Length: 229
Ligand code: APR
Image (cartoon, rainbow, N blue to C red; front, top):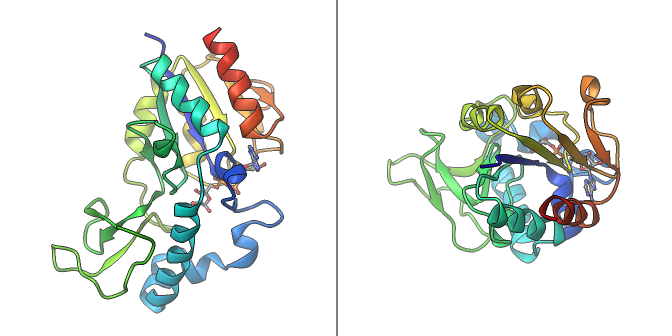
């Protein structure tokens, strides 16, 4: 069975209206990472972190999957060995019909225990109220992997990547590690497609991949059509 790995970043959700991080109008142009996306920020000003992720959760709930999300879900339904690994915290892959998605950096629709990085609870609606507690008694916090924190599902993602027959990378600048190192876990010589209108940090991969310089909503459906024949 063909094992296709689809690895996505913020660019796959850009055309759904959700901001990327490092494009000219990206989120990190408007907010400082050290204010809202580090453990120190959470300890120093938890309400600011809660407010930041409440705003992003509200945007996520208002957003809709785009043609790229639907094409990726169609690929997974047509080729059952397809796995999706995303850096995104939105649920647009799932809302387009994808299953068993590995979220490396957390999920905006869940909260987690302060004591246990994988002890999550679903959050109904967009608003977390700071001070609510997890059943384990600790304070609830956004289920987001903050900068400097461990990436709990990275080893599972590496295992999946190491068994790929093909990799499709969509909408990531490949700036953030360890996520960006996933390409290194793919078996040598497998076909790797990159769908991105910009210039991700491909480094040594530049000459080894097929770079489709189109927006995800155009390039991904075209690629999936080509692959499914
Ligand atoms: N279609 C495809 N790709 C796009 C589109 C689009 N319509 N618009 C932008 N892009 C590309 C950009 O060219 C860029 O390569 O998406 C990528 C976005 O890069 P980043 O903003 O760095 O997002 P990402 O790579 O997902 O960031 C990784 O950084 O801040 C952390 O945890 C956060 O998961 C995030 C991680």
